[in-house]
Length: 270
Figure 1 (tube, rainbow, N blue to C red):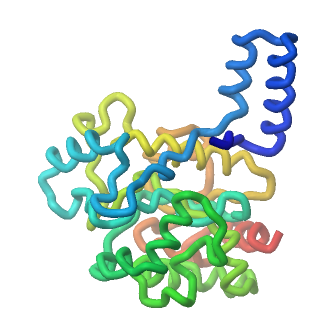
Figure 2 (cartoon, rainbow, N blue to C red):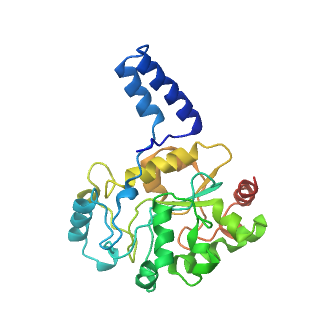
């Protein structure tokens, strides 16, 4: 399997260390140290099955435990909906949004079983190239639940950036704190998250992706929801800018500080 690196620079460093290890000029302990520094968290979503229930094997026990503990059905994970831990292409994204988890639309069952939309969702999970990386905005998928939510909330930002929808979809990335669909926000408690604070194992990949994106030059990271939860992931996320009203989720001048909105537009156009 091809190694995943945190950046091109880390790949170059790691390649050099591996060559030195093979030549016998560095020991195994040094190599393992550089492995930890340079290599990214492996993408667990490559192993998601193509048919429901759409729960990763590494998450299955934890999600079953979560659903058993949660009394409110609207907060339970919906296993027939394809998870969306992130939407967009990390390689081309200029604006990164941190949110809580994908919600639920009454049209999800239909769209998640539609062949072309399902393919786009899995291409996204496996980080394969596609014409509209932020696929809910793909005009071909007009009417999908995610698109109906995201389109009005990004409209002002897209217009201000003067980008066509395809380019806009290439430069936008959302990362969810929790990858699975629920009708209402997921329940959180010590009995669910334990000492780690997370609900399931696959969240580690999303958390690492968010950290990596926060370190990329030219990328602006904005919090949409759940400041406390993201701050527990890493202190850097407590210091980033958040929307004024996280409940409505609009990326607009009225829902951000003027300087932040200008920064978002500038990043998208960089």
